[in-house]
Image (cartoon, rainbow over all chains, first blue to last red; front, side, top):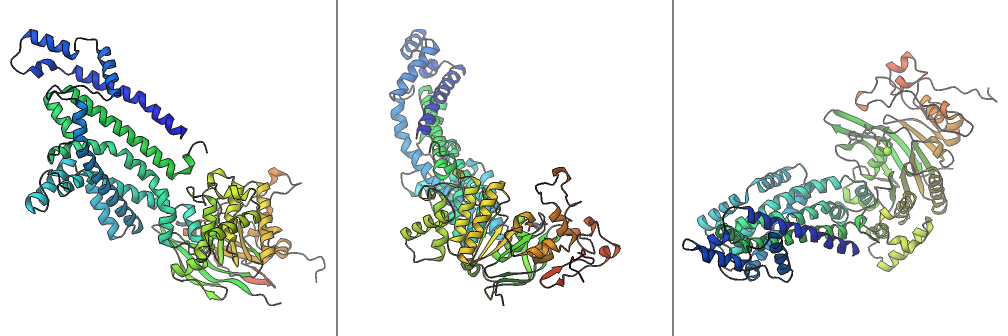
Amino acid sequence: MKYFLKRVIGTIPVLLGVVLLIFVMLRIIPGNPVVILLGEHYDQATIDRLTDLMGYDQPILLQFVNYVKGALVGDLGVSYKYSRPVTEMIMEALPYTIRLALMAVVFAWGLGLITGIIAAVKKNNFIDRMFMGVSLLGVSMPIFMTSLLLQYIFAFKLGWLPMTEEGTFASMILPAIALGWNSAGSVARMTRSSLIEVMQADYIDTARAKGLRKGAVIIGHALKNSLLPVVTMMALQLSSMLSGAVITESVFAIPGIGRLATTAINNRDMPVLQGTVLFTTVIVIAGNLLADFLYSVLDPRIRKGD
Amino acid sequence: MEEKNILEIRGLKSYFFTDNGVVPAVDGVDLDIPEGKIIGLVGESGCGKSMTVRSVMGLLKYPGRVVEGSIRFDGREIAGLKENELRDICGKDISMIFQEPMTSLNPVIKVGKQVRETLLIHDRSISREEADRRVIEIFKKVGISEPEKRFNSYPHQLSGGLRQRVMIAMAMICKPKLLIADEPTTALDVTIEAQILRLMKELRDETGMSVLLITHNLGVVAELCDYIYVMYAGKIVEQAETFELFDHTAHPYTQGLLDSIPRIGRNADRLHTIPGVVPNLLHLPKGCAFCNRCELAEKSCHDQGVELREISPGHKVRCIKPIEHKEVTGS
Ligand SMILES: Nc1ncnc2c1ncn2[C@@H]1O[C@H](COP(=O)(O)OP(=O)(O)O)[C@@H](O)[C@H]1O
Ligand SMILES: [Mg+2]
């Protein structure tokens, strides 16, 4: 437990660094945000007044400190474009993204694990080759292509599922598959190779010499060991899922975090962009911690202090 | 006295079908294990000892398989048995200990549970509590101190010697009729080795089980085994009762193994080793497999194969010109 406390505390500098980076980058890109905000009709007095109001005349370090202070109490500033608190906008978009990500994760891990295990058991025969062929397609297809293809076939041509997000479960199926497709491929491939490797281990011979049958050996002795690397990879994949969500949400018109970020980029709406990036960073870091945690639950060798 | 064999292997051939050709890892082995006896199987690394016993346990790895021969356990043919039928015998009637205590236990499962599993597989009616009690009991018997605490240890928390004791506990818990120990002490240091070997002998004396002890060190088997098989390049080259083998060594290979046992009083740097290396099983010589390394080899050794033949009761050798011994009381 102490180990995890340490790990959590260790993420603080990372977070601060990320905030600083976003902060600086967004200020390096050309174009005065105040001018953009005002549109075509403005005079110098208005610009000055707004700049002062938004704190842009302050030294960047002070702006940074103020931002961090605000972020700590959940205040991420106010959207230029919509004049609403960024936190509120994120909270509004969050449920959509969570639902999408959860469904994608369940799809990816479920399909990936099952096909990976079957492929490993049926090593080198037809089923294995077929699964691995499809999974190669899975890992190598760009997510926008998967999204558009699924949309075209199942929504446009066959009409089985809705084209875009409508608030129903059915309307989330295609986006979830599109988003999970990549991960399903890599989970399947990794599960397969890991399980095949573990089946060569000495303790598998021990298990068989004890009298365990093949199925029981796989479930009771091989799986847990072979899932160690897979679990880590799955948790780390959370970040690629989030970047994938940006695309999926655009294609399927889902008002989630990803779309919030893309709209913010188009609008040069810095507080919103800053807020979404910070938020995603927190989730990615949480994913890494989760990976660590799961790993130590599964593997007693790295459990510290017992 | 008529002895009953718990295990009888006849003409066992186990080959590996590799891309480079067929590897005859076990090539026509006959081997008997009488009830209650400790039998040694000795030979250099790579001569096919492990593959012989793995054939018995159905543990040959792809691309290896048993191609021919009979394996009778307790009067029942078990070669070619269905996988599930064989599993019912393994762990219960025949159990096995492996060479590497470091990697032979599952790293993510508590050792007590791993030992208990053997019991639960073969005795479905036993209760958890009773099984736990039996595990603690067997832990005590194999000399594991603080058995209750050790039950909940993971393998990485135990020393090599302790892990091997856990392996022995796992092998013994169902009171098998035959224990196969494949180089159980090779990975351990000498003092631990002696303890483990003594433990196995004690367990045999107590339970009356048979033991097949595999080793590459003839010194190890000398005081433990009743009868010894010497294996070379997939074949048995000599077999005899322990005293007979040591006193009337007939095969130059066995002599080489004996000479390479380190002994007190013998100069360490004059330690004898057999010249050359084990031949590649893909390209065995036409004649005796050992001829290229044998100091006594003659032309005929290179030209013709040689069968195992009995030179005195219970003593067989596969050599055209076995070493002669001048008997003190000789005729
Ligand atoms: N996977 C494999 N592929 C090909 N040959 C193998 C394989 N495993 C073992 N062998 C062959 O089997 C021979 C005997 O191995 P083994 O029984 O393990 O020897 P040891 O007497 O040291 O236990 C080796 O020399 C090797 O040629
Ligand atoms: Mg071996």
